[in-house]
Length: 292
Length: 304
Image 1 (cartoon, one colour):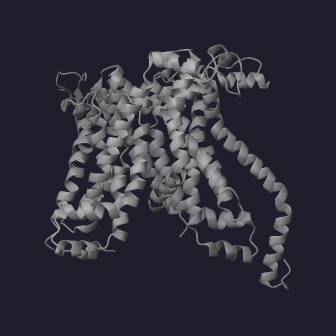
Image 2: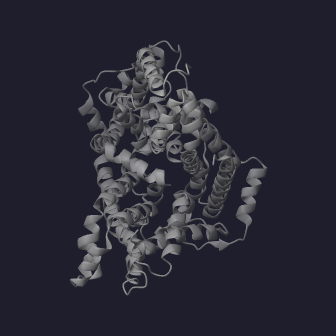
Image 3: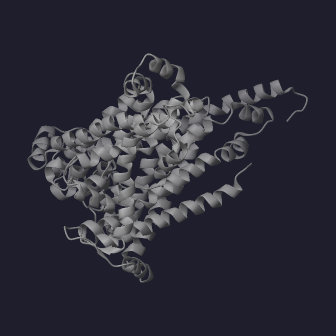
């Protein structure tokens, strides 16, 4: 390094040098990244393409262009599995559970955030501890509880437990600590509003951004679940989409075409949701992690 | 910030009412099941209407016997670790390299790549498992057709019938599903490093590699610890993908059976709910020890 040059000049020279050698490396890097991006999408592409071909074509060729058998495959698929019942069940579970969580989870966050009752810290610590426990640990006990409560093959067995999301309470409480001002609550009290009314009319709407972020996450998490639904939903008519898809091989054996159709139908809604919400979803991941 | 406002005021007790529904659900569906699993591990129970018989620590004796004689549970511990390690090493390297690249200022198209790399993680794992069960099929699966069509192989290969090919397939799929997620976490970590550090390094004439080794890597350490810990908890309780991809068999010859699969199988296939509970507790102790060691080992080396 030439010590006579001022730092300013040094930086400038460095920048110019880097610009010159960038072009070639940059192109290579972008090619690599595009290949990786292709790799992320290709399996889903092949899946959808295969859903439009017949068995023989799938088994003998590697197809990259759509065929004309989509409707025929859909008919064969529907004859053996009603995937729409699965969608209905999944929607009831994830939608209902998320709604309950949005209400009662926010309620708990509010309780922790704005009320200094004895034991607040200790109880919140208990909530944090449950975040560390893998959900698979208590499955046998969970099964036992569901049997005792007579909730086997009942979607409520998956909906109600969604309220106990420690992540939700942790995140929404933090949001309230920073944004929900005591003056608003106090003036509402002076106006004679009841505590529940304050919660419903003021706290809930003001916390909506945080509720939406965490609600979306819990919805996706619930939508993708397999193990717990497998344990409590044994009957065919209450099965959620992941349970149906997990059984695709057993149902269709080497009947490739309808199987690909079933799997495609299970994946496409998630993909469509991702196209619209990808920014929020990715933003939410980082919000949870950096603080942890 | 506003927490202390209502200290000692007459409204404080309303807090109990607000947290009550949450705690009832948590107690009934989360805490009680864990305690109950511990109790059931001391019993013999077939999961039916008959009540569990208390048998003391016999189930734990059986777990130890399995481990001593190299039974399926011991095997499942090994399988889970092998598949997790083979997935996590490439996953972390790839995620770190991509995170550095995508956070660099001159980089264009960050949001597009970030979204596409994350896509495999968002898709239901059961669907991914089912999809690859068909794609990897023998002899007519699409991956075999691809390899033959472009002359990578002459004969189709039976991926899911060879011990190491099936393990490697699962690890590769896990890397594929998780590198985007890990990358996003690392990107957030890099972005939280003050810009001035890098500017100062550039002014001092440090190369990009040096800046990475001396600034990015040490300051990323807390995030990496977090990522290792969450990944090991998730990895050791691996279930969905393997369960679907091997149709619940953990084949070939239990060389891909994971610990949670063994817990599930003992209870819901073999009706040994007591023994299954003991396995679940053993799994928990295992995870607890590993996380404890991980935190202890990584922390002392932390750069002030």
